[in-house]
Amino acid sequence: MSTQSLRGFFLKNSHAKDALDADKYPTIRFNSTAVSKNGSGYKTNGRLTLRGVTKPVVIYFTFEDHGHGGIFRGNFKFAPRSFNITHDGTPNELTISLTVPVTQ
Image (tube, rainbow, N blue to C red; front, side):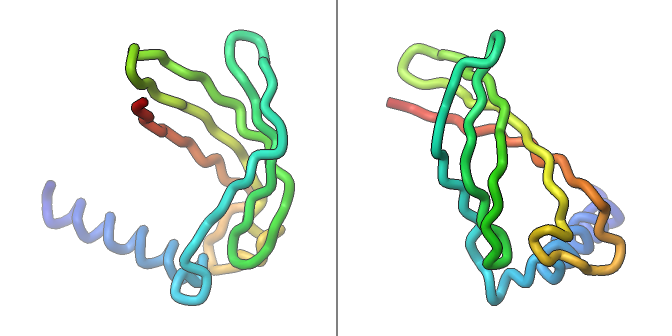
């Protein structure tokens, strides 16, 4: 990785840490309340807690079975301002993509 890339990586993470007030709110939590089949994938309804604010969120995901494990891949959108994230440059909507490997 080049120095320029490292600098950009640091700045992005530093700005995100500030915007999320990570020192005060170090944990982002999602609690699922329901999971259902959705076409060739699934969806889970739940509650996302970010910066001390909890809101309902729907995550659409797929599961790749690898025998004794697999990978969940999903994404969801949310409005940062609804979680009191108002740092300069914060977009009106963010898409978060998740890749979660699991083993038995």
